[in-house]
Amino acid sequence: MSDTVAGKSSVATFAGGCFWCMVKPFDQWPGIKKVVSGYTGGTVEHPTYEEVCSESTGHYEAVQITFDPDVISYDELLDIYWRQIDPTDAGGQFYDRGPSYQTAIFYHDEDQRLRAEASKRRLAETGRFSKPIATKILAAKPFYEAEEYHQDYYRRNPAHYNRYRQASGRDRFIEHHWEDSPREL
Image (cartoon, rainbow, N blue to C red; front, side, top):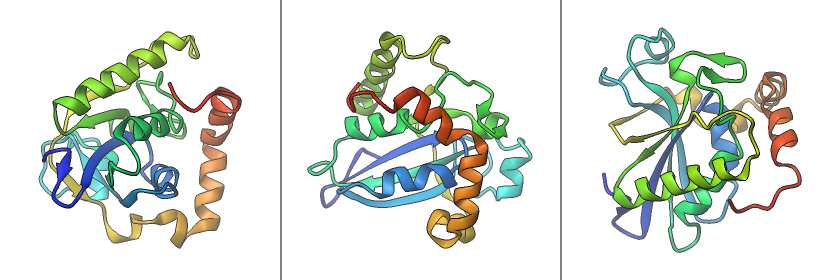
């Protein structure tokens, strides 16, 4: 799928650990048309949550974002993405461990690949983290929507979502590493 889709829409795909925690940070920005939780990067067609969690499919939990590039750029989405994850953790994210919870940027075309690589390089050059950036930059593969109960989880189950997000350590990590930093990398 190309970055630019008919009607001034583009698509970005990011894996950042638990997909529940990756929807809200993108959903709140002007120009975001849709954020879908799902699975990508693996070898099994139409995997289920249970299959992905078994670590037997090769899939990552991810979000696919449809956005208007005239309102919000891919570079801005990358900037938002980096601020939601621990980019140095190659074993998963926060509470969630294993390959399906690793971080990755899935590029849809050469421009996205180049922008993602430049963004990753800029982040590494800031010296913000004492360990190397482990987030992978991979070619997009088919994206499969997760089950309906995973979609918009933060809206449907706000109490559980907020408890999970806080207890996972994600919010503390973000506050510690990003609280007083300029927005752009």
